[in-house]
Image (cartoon, rainbow, N blue to C red):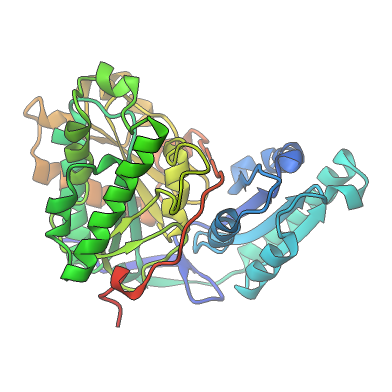
Length: 403
C-alpha cells in the first residue's frame, strides 16, 4: 500500500514543497558557461547544480523554462551568471526568482572584472546562499502534491514489453493515490492518438490530444526525420508504430486529465500528456534534441522525480530532479548495473511480473522522495539541455479537470 504522506520535505516560501534542496547556478548565455561551471564544480558534492541557456537571441520559451526551473520546488536558491550583452532578460529572471521567496543573486561578468574575479565573487555568493538554504523549514507533503514524469531513451525491442508497461502500472498506482503523473513524447505516440484520445476525460480534450500528435507528425514530415534512431533499429525495433506502442504503454490505463506544454504545472492530481513539439511552422530544428531536453521540460512542469525507461542503456541523469532508471533488457542491466535502479528485464527471464515491477517502481519513487539517491545521482550525473522552441498558451479544454 502506497504511503500517503512524505516527511521532512523542504517547504518553500511560495507554498510548494521539494524532495531536494538544490542550489542552481544558471548561465544565461554560452559565453558565461565556463565561469558558471568553474563556480559549480567546487561545490558539486554539496547539492549545487549547473543549468543554462546557450543562445544569445532572446526566446520566450527559454525564459519561461528557466523561470520554471529556477523556481522548481526542489530548488532552494539560485545564482545567475550573465556575460552582460546577451539578449536574455536577466533582471526579469532574477526578479521572478526573488518573488518566489528564494534567495537569488546575479553576477554580470563584464561588470565584475572578468573570469577570475567573477569566479571568486560567485563562490562567495554560493557560500551565502547555501547558508540561507540550510535554515529553510522542513515539513510534510501529501502524495497529492507529488509530481512524477516519465521519458524513454535508448529504447530497444524489450522496452515496450517490460520497462514501459511497468512504468504504466506504477503510474496507475500513483494516479489512484492522487499524485500527478506526466508522460510526453508526442512525436513517439504517432499511431496511438485514437486509443489515447479514447481515455480523455471529455470529448474536447480528446480532440486536443489528437491534434497534438497530428502536429508532431506534420513537424517530422517537414523535417524529414522521425523519432526513430539507428540504435532503436539495432535494438530490435522495426517500425515507428512499434516504438509508439511501447512509449504509449508508459502512460498506464488511467483517464487522461489534460494536456500541458513545457512550463505548465498541473493544478490538480491525475495523468497529463506533455506536448513537447513546438507550435507553428518548424523553425528551430528537431523538437526532441535529446532525452535530457525532454527531461528538463518534464522538470519545468513540476516533476519532483523522473522515471527513465531504457533498453539499450542510457546512463544520463539530470540537474534539479532525480532520475530513476528502469532497465528493460536483462542483458543491459547486467552490463550497466551501477547505472540502473530497477531491473524490469527480469520479466523476460520469469523472475518477476509486470505488477511486481510496477510495485517496485512505486517503492523506489517513494524511497527517492524520502532522500535515497538514485544511481545517476550517486554517480554525479547532472546533464542538462535547453534550446530554442516556440509554444502557444494552452486553453481551458487542455485542463478540463481543474476546478
